[in-house]
Image 1 (tube, rainbow, N blue to C red):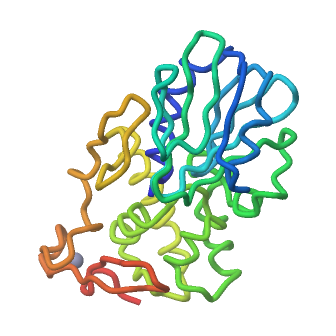
Image 2 (image 1 turned 90 degrees about the vertical axis):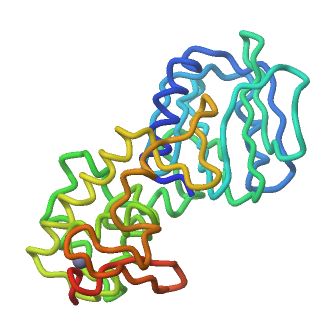
Length: 266
Ligand SMILES: [Zn+2]
């Protein structure tokens, strides 16, 4: 699933390609998850921003086109008339190109909403600060984690303590900060380490153009390279890079999780 570094990589490629383009026409799959894509018809695209794992396209009619890539969603520029059965939405641009949203498994989501009105997108509305904003601090993270007794990994995946972290970067950040993923209580020093680790692993992911394990491709169809930089995720049974103990693979709240049973103590 694309997480913040993958979505940010796509945003950086999309923004110069789409800024200023007029959407002449639009088509969408009838599913309620995609149907409102057609509401962008007739609008001009302004800035392309990102909030957590969501892409936000400012439209010149005081609305926003919002795209969440889900598991297998991708955006691409297609030639007119060339399409396939997995394209769930398409926007015809005034330069003759077609922006397509393709999503094999259909876990993604498209919405057109009045600017800043996210009531129909509860995860977006409730998510915590952007990890590189000043609002994301060790104290804020510690306080946010303390409002719930859910396991720390599950809290990170909820997007509420901080936006943009999914399964890969949660495992990486928890390993780096030596916090056990199933902890229900995080101390202040642990929260401070986790804060540093979240920023570190996300920044590294962006620098590497995202992580490509199966489906993720950037806007130009290329793969990321962060899969070669992962210290923990996907390395079950391989030696911990810090202490050489074989990393353990388990399931926490239904999500596959890799961690070091020696470094990451509860
Ligand atoms: Zn270790």
